[in-house]
Length: 396
Ligand SMILES: Cc1ncc(COP(=O)(O)O)c(C=O)c1O
Image 1 (cartoon, rainbow, N blue to C red):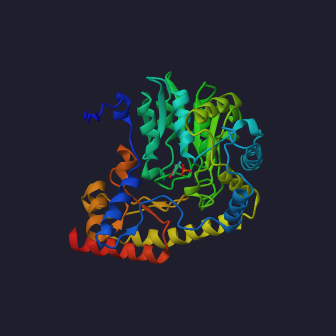
Image 2 (image 1 turned 180 degrees about the horizontal axis):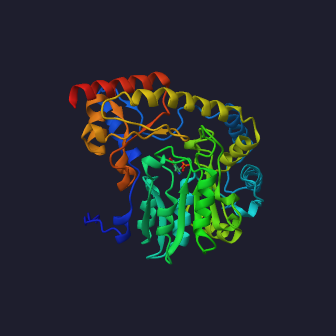
Image 3 (image 1 turned 90 degrees about the vertical axis):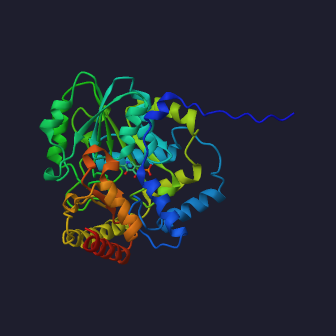
């Protein structure tokens, strides 16, 4: 006889420490409002609004027809790992070999797997705050101690290297860098990177350098700590295809790291995903080796939008924004509105029909800011700014 057994779900204790990425929650709330007939302009999600370039789509279709539909090696196909090793060697001016490359489903798993593989209970990890929320979430999840380095507006959201130096201690096991940065658009200069390397010195500390926005830079050149003397084998470089090639839904990214760690990350891949989708990997080869003009076109368009949005935001009462130097986010200071970040973001969504993210969802030092993504058309950005301005005039 069939029995119905009901009981309370008892999760593992560690689940209480797992955070989230608010962008997906706000997107769901915005979609609910749209189903109720409301019009919402989406400035919350961090993905290019462009289609994946056609040469990459064609390569994936050809790969599907050619039978790239099976399991592959956990670390990724040799063809793609070679292409990545070549690209990183050229762009970061270091010698990278394919056995130092692990291909994973997006950039995110490199964060997940690196922290899982390296951090024990009580190990300290220094990470940028405000910053991509998955860093703090994963550090807490594995029982590590999350040590925030505050990114300050007055420093253009770069590091205060002296403050950073003071955070490095005996228990520091990993340091996370992210440049260009989500959510602030801050970019570390060559001098910043050199000073950070100098502060770390010859300690046995690894650096997870999240460079997913490395091709979306508006001023200056990208500098990676992997290029600093003595850091090649202490850096886990995270990069991928999602942002540069508008491939967020393809789920493909990679890490470059010393080969012994690469082997361990591959083991985590074997235990979780088995491998990254084979046809996505073939599309990845085309992305890296094919025509690059679409990357530059998208970059220029993000720059054009940034240049339109920042001056308009600065005319809105209670808002003030610095000009971001990379990525596709604007991070205005909204303390002049007298509202908390969350209340303002909630009310802009419900009452003005503009979805954006509270700065506090990027960590405690994000309070007082909002994140607006410029990954939307110029026309929608103009409409969104008009809505925000009108709402502020009426409600504040
Ligand atoms: C700083 C940062 N790192 C990593 C990722 C993850 O990228 P992917 O979609 O390739 O997993 C994101 C995505 O928003 C990001 O902003």
